[in-house]
Length: 168
Image (tube, rainbow, N blue to C red):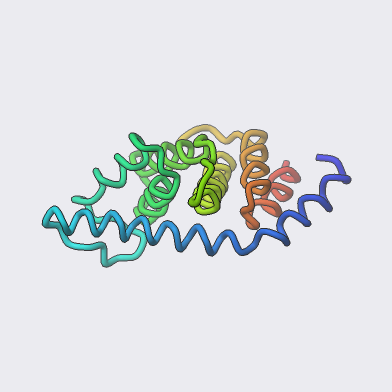
């Protein structure tokens, strides 16, 4: 990464910090939407924050896998992060972070929320790639994904991309 790009990355970080709060609120709304549908089908709401009750998981997975709703994918990433490290957990984290990161941002009223969820998911995916969670470590791909998240407005990703790029 050239020295010319560092100020640009810092500028992007400073102008987009508010989007992190937006996507966390959107993920909470998605969890609430999943809860509302689950209650309509006779299930209880989620009381644990980021963890989605087992009976609600098919709804969230369908919203992510079948409908391509970025906020649902990010809610699943948050959900699986609450579990202790295991091969299954790591595979699910990778699956939903990669899925959301590959969804193109839609146009329309929900565009900002979708972009923020995609950016948050890309940030998580970049961290997983850098850590080698569930697959071999890929520092170059991690920097690429973190830069994508940075450009999409995730303020945490900008300095993280610089940090990962500088690692040996």
